[in-house]
Length: 236
Image (tube, rainbow, N blue to C red; front, side):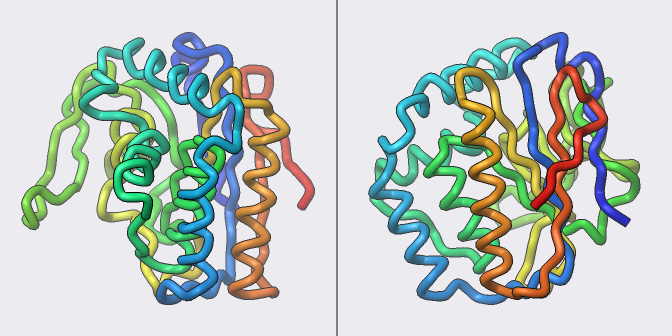
């Protein structure tokens, strides 16, 4: 069954310009980082200025974080954190073939991209503001721990708990993609002024990269925005 996320109305009240592309991929053949995936990371680091709207898009995410009380200078969105690392080190760490792929696209498009193991989800991924106290599994100084999220914080969660804190700042450990993961859910999250067409292009590049790993991979896409909060199916 395809993963179909839910976006709660309070998210569009915070950011009416929010749009997301949801991609559910099955029969993915992940593996260790290879020359192709590491080449994508190197290319992304050399193309930081290729998207003319990149800095403005990241600034929109900073404003979005402030809207629910987060401090983006301390906890930046995932795309900004990767970009800062690429600017500082002129390199990005290799993790595995799939994570390398979507990290490279995140930097190239200045676009937060989350990748999750679809098989461990309990119910639909849901984007909402936290009541406060929901559990989030993470690691601090090499030790597993459970954090309680803040009231009003924007989170992704399922029936078991929080899967990503502060919209797209930090992913939990339970849903991470490993080399043995074969069913995956990705969410690509966009604000103004990033063009919708560029969001769709990033999604197409992600699917092409997954098909490189296994031509028999199957993917379904949903486009979600304020006018279509339950998603419009996209052909691919």
